[in-house]
Image 1 (cartoon, rainbow, N blue to C red):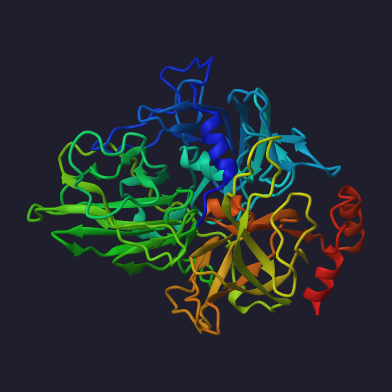
Image 2: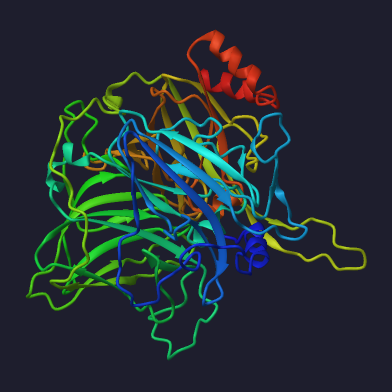
Length: 580
């Protein structure tokens, strides 16, 4: 709930086309309602490395929306990055956004002695987050606390994919606190595929692979034109798109997906929306079809129990939070089916949540001319040791409780002389360690949690608000143990990097919660963040820093010397309380 003022400034301040574009087509190209869904462009690693130069653009779409995108010099927008475990992704990212006149932002000024790229954020700063990848949070890797790339600057990322990275679907997007939501809603996102899932889930071998990147966007500036309102209800908070084919209120003209009748396909689905929770179903003549789930958030289902083989979970709908991914085998309709559609169901996001109605996203047509899709390879190797193996049986070294909260506030800034101060109500969002005072995220805050590499921790995350929140942590995954105090089923006891926390009814004495087991046994050390992945909430302050220290005392001292101000303001007391 609540729209973020900084987001509105971005949308207003960037309402002009990007100059100097030299690609083969306009930057940030988009489809039109009713278009056929086609695959994103693909880029593949070679000899252990994927080198890619991306430009970051903005422009104004045909409907007046401010658009953002990552694009190669030859015009490939939001390419899918295909890599193998152990590979390295090298991205040279150039910020092509124009400088906004007077474009300073009050959201973030990096005051500490540590920086990565530019020192001060502007309204046109950007960076990249490699969502779900268990990569280092060091500068030039998957670091978002300090990394700023300002207009005209080029910055190089070097993302080392761990050799034991689970094979599956990941994604990338900007992660500048305060403006992440409008940039992601503008379309700045793309998929990452870590290859090799066929070795853990042989059911996908040989199947056509279909990548679906689902995004949201602000309601079109031309709402209500072109015909009568055929919507079954009020306007949603956000429009949706599927591989950049928009689904626009009020007409909801669905995209078209062509499949060969009766054939199986391997769908890789990313909820790359900023704020929209999705509940997907494949309906044939109104009947929900079985979806054979083989991976969640990039991790093959059932693959971490020591057997190093995945299991298949059959569902008839897929609830996917913003940032979440599901990979599943589906079967195309046969010749007897008259109507086939991919829909998202209505989401009850709580009394204070966004309105997210049911919508038909795509109609499925059978055709001998279905788009050419890459076929998955045959199994080629025995599964390697798995990244999160045996976490369910590991010794728990710490227990913590965190909670989501939010409050209304008014704009307290002084108006210009002689002007009346506007009373602008907006929401402040918090994620807090139980026992601490809620504070808005700031990159110069001390870590809210400090732990050590090798730790295994059980966290309870409570929702003390009357709207849904989506817990996400960078760099690692977690094992889901309980929802609302009850152990989850074997099928749901999987590894995630994003998971929904139910909303509070405003009356019950016990808050809704999830319990998760956090895995710090990998190589990751340093500072990174956890937050609600409804990005309006993250932009509004619902994010905090966690620090993972090396195991040895000497290494801890060296780390502290590199970050001289990071523990000021009480970070030590938090660590002491958590260790008790």
